[in-house]
Amino acid sequence: MRRLTQTPELGIPFPYSPIPTACRTTPELFVYDVGDSDQARAAQAGLACTACPIATACLKWALANPALTTEGVWAGTIPRQRRALRRRLADRLGKNWTTVVADYDQRLREQRETVRHSPLTVAQARIVRMDRELNGPMPRPRTISPVQQRRNRARLAGAA
Ligand code: SF4
Image 1 (tube, helix red, strand yellow):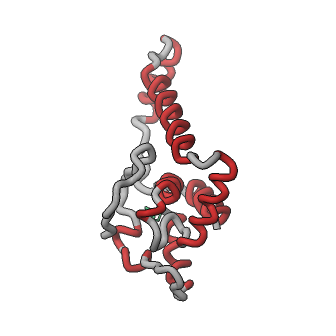
Image 2 (cartoon, rainbow, N blue to C red):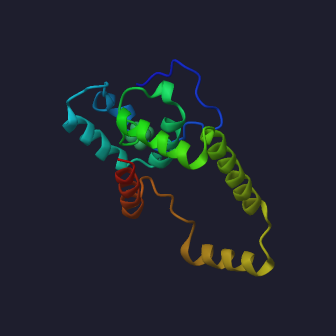
């Protein structure tokens, strides 16, 4: 299992995964040192990342924590690709881009909380009740959908 030896960027926490991620179950696949020539293994790790439910948030965390991710494959990226992405983010959002991203995430979380705690109208509550009676409770997906997997793959390919 990967160990963190330095303080992570607190504004961008490492995401929780509902299932064990590939880098936890097969950490040897994700080993990649600077100058490593085993591109096949890195590609295999990258492919595993496309099926990961927390790939996007993992990439954000990896980019926000350069000192903790100097090596290895994180969210389908190798160190050189992460350096390039950090440069692009700094160009777009400024030198303190991690703060900008953390603030944006915080606002998004607050908005979601607000929506979650807004009471339903009588009509909405009736619809929800009827839907539950007809269809039962919503199934909880154990893994990500093919659509989400395709989206992850596209995002990670765009990062390369
Ligand atoms: S996306 Fe991140 S958490 Fe998921 S398998 Fe890849 S390195 Fe691990």
